[in-house]
Image 1 (cartoon, one colour):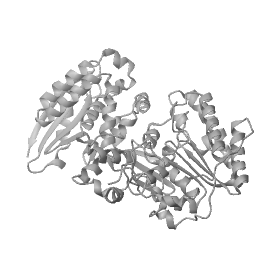
Image 2 (cartoon, one colour; image 1 turned 90 degrees about the vertical axis):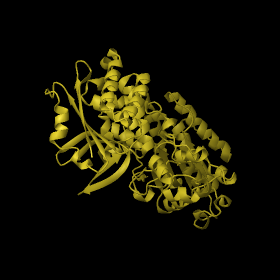
Image 3 (tube, one colour; image 1 turned 120 degrees about the vertical axis):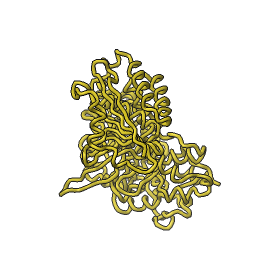
Image 4 (tube, one colour; image 1 turned 135 degrees about the vertical axis):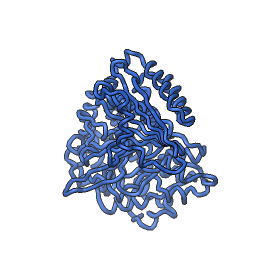
Length: 515
């Protein structure tokens, strides 16, 4: 049994030290033989650094590392190229001077690696000098690999001025690549976000973006086949369907994949936990959702244009763009009419859905302790088939939210705020939750399934819907329960009405239908 490559990002170390390796060298052959300038955006912890390290080893002619892999018999090992490997992955750069120091250090490391001396003081010009010097010394064109190209910007995304200054400085560095084209063999740039070519890669109009391309959907990440073959000796007693439900589902139009970080840690412990999610809290995203009064249940079914998915802009940030690029949403399907593609997005898997909604609750309510207690009490009420207890639980919960929180929280004045809280609670518990379920008679606000029980919710805000009991009556009159009729199934119809002045539940009516 080999070692699990948890945290290993260097191809040479992975192979030499006997770790499992999912062969991605076929993709190395494809990109290097088909083009010259590539860009790839993928969420964090997805194997981007390892892929670049693999490309580097190939161009350095380290054939012994590729024994038994696709590239061993599909690469010209008689030729090597100098490789400039730039990574902004480590550390936190808080100001422009930090970036300048970091890039200067990167260039100095390249000098020492190749035994050359750069003379130009300006960083941009020194980068250009490095490319030409390597070309001249080795009489071979240069390979440029840029890892985490956008991390300095993303680390400062809440400080728009600093983020913009860092973006402009990086743009200055990257512009060197275009001017050095005669001396370049191959370029591959990776990161989490996808800036427009105008905002960050000015001039690199021949940069081929393979982020949303079915041919490269599995260039990073593990497919189901990878899991079942490469890690076969680790799967004794593993429920593969449960693992798929929890961790699989990331898609960029092609084959769905797992995040490697999740799979490696799961295979190590055999416990289903949110390993990837726990490596980074999306606090900025949540704040942006509050600012935009985003209706949280809409995350189940987002529609977006190609422009929206690929237009990260420090000056104009969009919730859907950030959610997709950060890995909290993925592509479920795509439709095309004339020259326009429409993308349908949703959570990639149970890990992300359950963890994200759980993280949203404290931001929605400002009361972490009460949120946790209410979450488990709500589950007990559903399992006991006691809607009346559910009423008391949520009434007490809304009453526990500090009055000052409503004044500070912009989302709390939005009518979807209450429905968002109910949705987050049930989704955070890992229950099957269906918001805005469209049927012939209308849209069901929220459906929650638990074993042989179905709970159908309709939400109303007083002042907009003044008739008491109108929420439950709507469920009855529009026959929302009909589609769930089945022998042995228990259905509960629950109408919830909120008083915006009291900021609490004003009406809670329910009835059961046991079939």
